[in-house]
Image 1: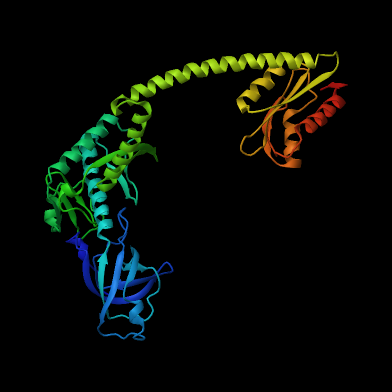
Image 2 (image 1 turned 90 degrees about the horizontal axis):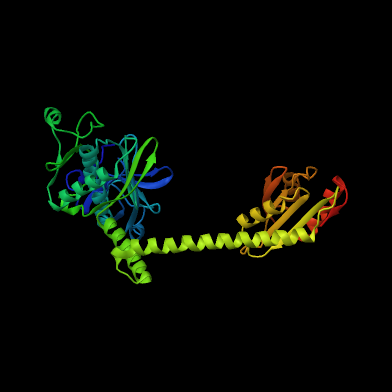
Length: 433
């Protein structure tokens, strides 16, 4: 089978074309069509494949199974385009095109808005990769042009924020200069003379994308024809990735949509703080300072409440020589941190085994903290809680002296702690609880 002619190689904005069907095939189990020529880009080099539609316009050298098939062939949705290892380009279609045979004449139309978006991201990636080399000495290891965001993986361990901002600014300056972007098919001698940013992945018929006076890169993807078509380029995040740095960026309409969304959020914050957008950081800092003060006051008040509660519960369960005191309480609207502090404070008295719980406001589950005093060595808190979860469900565990977890909402907290008191009494004389 002859290779498919790639019309996008020379004209990235060509949206319509006519072609002859070479084969009705499949790609990994999905129905596909193979054409003699195409403007559809097949996924490769980190760039997603095109989408669009094919229409039946005639037939040459083949036959249709029936004239009734023409109706179903009026418009065939192309949902993806992939290339096989042997170079065959598969136009994946939404459903099998029954009745279509090799030799059929088809008209194709790509989703040009999607193509323009992909071109914008891809050209922006070339320019940002170039700028990162020039500004920070950071070579691109790989890139991925996703449906929502695009990424560049750099072969450096760290990347200075100032250098990243400088690279972003250099790219946007080049966009505003509206430089020409050319597609080159150099001879072997001409290729050697070009200042390529990276070596080509093929040995012959190398295609080079030149961003005038800025970057030369071997590439088989689709690109803008001038840098002004790229639109704004924004770096929106960085992270450590496989020992290097991953840069996430947006270009063109994606960058504009992201800026609008962020602007809307800032506007809502400004209205909430009754200030202008530039004053939001100061308003947030003031709010944070006020919150810190209130948090300190709340913590102090809660600690005072816990101390009063501990004193009252200790008074209700006075120490008796040779006996353990089991203290169980169910606290409403408390949190796990409060339970831990209360259980620990109760267990400061050596003879106490403290069972403290609250109910999750959403699920009703019992959140539990259990801790024993220094003299209650016969009671194993972790073992007790694990036995409950094994019997009734839930999760949790811990050490012999301290445990915490969750138990089903249907359990009677007072009953299970009375049973625990009985067990503790059996291990160390009469229990109090």
